[in-house]
Length: 312
Image 1 (cartoon, rainbow, N blue to C red):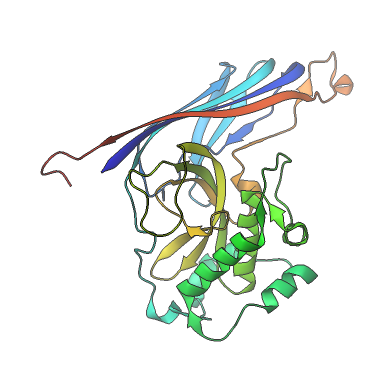
Image 2: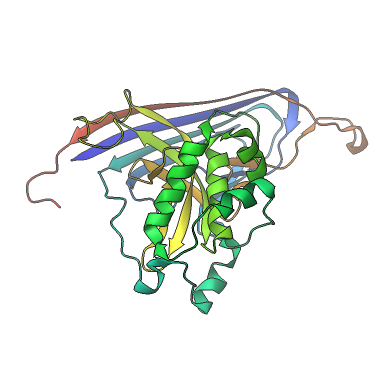
């Protein structure tokens, strides 16, 4: 059975005076590797006096670059999309025999391609202590990743954090809590320190009330929800990029709609911009204006349909 989900994501910014907006980069279009079909998509940006160009970043993500032509006191970004969701088995992949047992080594040519996803900084004392408890004896690779993902889910309390940016792994471990992006970045760093290529993913998470209670595992949500989310993906030879969500402790499923997958969270932010400036008589008199208010909300609807007889 296919569930057709229509989602509208509206973000609004209001400034305390007329400003000239610098170029904006918008990463709010489902990425090519999205597991759910996206039959319809639209992006609307105001003020209307702008030029918008679509291209792909170095990692294949869809990126809209917007150049504004007139001063404005408001900025809005609205996404409308339809998602065709069918249940997927997150374990439906095959790992090459050479990578089925951890630890393993990527082939030289593949390691070169994955270099950006293997780089990591020095581990601080808390991360070092956490890594020291990971058993390095040969074990099933997928089972290890499932255990690491579940352990972070159990170790960290989830919190909604409105401050920009992502916490350093040391800070997240010290606090024992973090947002979805904090735990996703921590998982990516853990994997890289273990020699596993990992990337940060930002996207939407759509969770629908199940038609019937699951026979085993988590009970699921009590009401349909949709929100911005973050998780990590690990590259396994033979399987490709496999998603792990430490916020839930589960693998990524059909409700995870990736928007950007990158080596660093900075290049996966939904919206990034150059500094803005006020309207002034001369360049020397310009000053930055502050953001008075910002809001982001989502509306979505869902209907279910059964494919017609003879259709795939």
